[in-house]
Length: 103
Image (tube, rainbow, N blue to C red; front, side):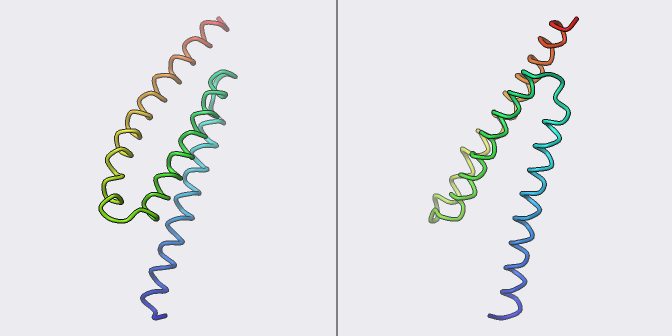
């Protein structure tokens, strides 16, 4: 194996490690700053769904042949953006409800 191949392998490994570390950091911060028990429970469920979805997407990128590998970006983009929108709206609704309950 040549030097260029090793650099590519190390770059891919570094990308995976940085990506997973960023995901773990973001997940833990979301849970840390949850304001109430219902919000925290929602964030746990949403995080699990998100981690599973992203894992399936990455598996598709690795395992699917072209052109399916390129086409998998379409549902991923739609599901990711709609999921983030749903996540944010639901989290805000739960925060509003929990703040009214405690008032």
